[in-house]
Length: 246
Image 1 (cartoon, rainbow, N blue to C red):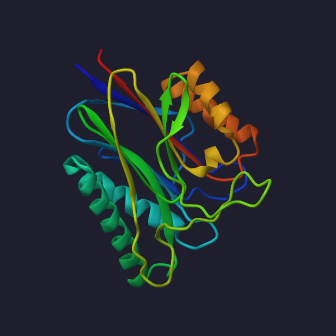
Image 2: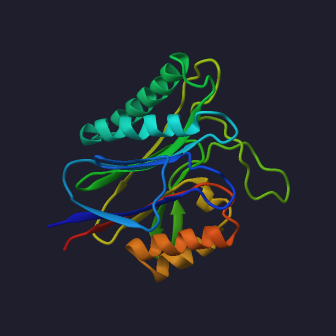
């Protein structure tokens, strides 16, 4: 029987005093908390499986509330997400829910990014809003399939913490334009879903080298170690998805 193995880890890093990231894997959520070591969950390939990481906006109150709202919404709607339009509507609903929570007494500008994938029997729907990322691990290297919502960087600047869109994050409601990309799925395929706490301090070539050397929980652990070795400047959350047929 074909199955999907998902290995995950979420950690505050070495600078932040709390974790504002959240994760969803199928019905399982990890909201603004810490895993001390990688966890691996296995699901049969069939019912739509949503895997996503949400990164609460730093520097604004309530980031952990916003990220938790989003992954819980995705956990509840994931089993019915079968096409690109459904994924877009689910993300619009997440955006509305974050704004509704803010207007209902939550922090007025709380917000979050999100990136993830819905794994179907023969395809995968990658999605994101903000600068959390989805990568396909290909034979010739990592391919980023998400689209960064960042302004242009200054000369000599590799990364920026600014985002051009997020779920929530502003005092007045702002609509989003989700990025959704469809790809085929076959046994052996692997996808990395992560917040910028991994990709900002760790260059893509280092990520690629570790992904080539390790798999599943060990790969997740080594990727996290690389972010910590680079200073761990932000919350680090990642999920490694592997499709297998036995």
